[in-house]
Image (cartoon, rainbow, N blue to C red; front, side, top):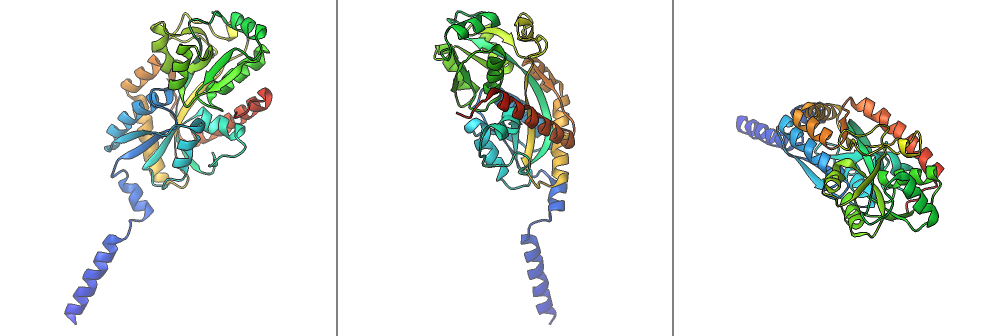
Length: 327
């Protein structure tokens, strides 16, 4: 009898060990293995640069590696769908952007994810100044000269973007609307390919984050025309704003942040938010962001959720105003 009881006890202990830990227990021990940080655009672009910068510091703080995985395509929608369908355990998160959680929901008739219901906001990372750049052989050197070129050749001045619906696409569409000109949109899968084709002369102009184009500007491989921010950038102080170049009030930033799949335990979100905020306070991250014309933001998941809602409304108005389409 005692032997039977002992065997039953051993069997129950074995079964208990095989059962998954309750969500609360898993959250308390989080993380116990590497975390995947999905970036929805190509390596080398602004999203990828910031994601890798943040991942390194978050990994140090959390005690587990945070590994960036690029899943480019469809203006970030491929990466977003992957994360939306991932297990809600905090081990797969996304570096989202103003494209994925601001523009795409307003531009695409159908998305493979719900930008609000399928994600849990973690933290807004930063906002980044964009710069309007041109191929060196393009004759326009100022905003006024670009507008004159576009009016002389309606629909023939081509601009690159990081994809249909990207922040760069919609920013250019807003610029063209304000300037009352028609430009030809040529989308690519990320900033990297777009910049390559700008340099080769396949397209004449594009908006890009300073973070991914400043090295090309300083090397003389592309020419800056103006920045899209409301004030000049400390990184490119000699470059005027679009507002001071003839379009008063024009001021747009791109932004990035961290999200997890919906229903990720609140304690896991809290831990990720805490680590991200701490990473954002390190001098390595802050200096690198300043060098790339980005302003650290930080904050709570609730603040980021409210910001996402406001951005969806802003870009919704922009889509209606410009008549921009997902091509």
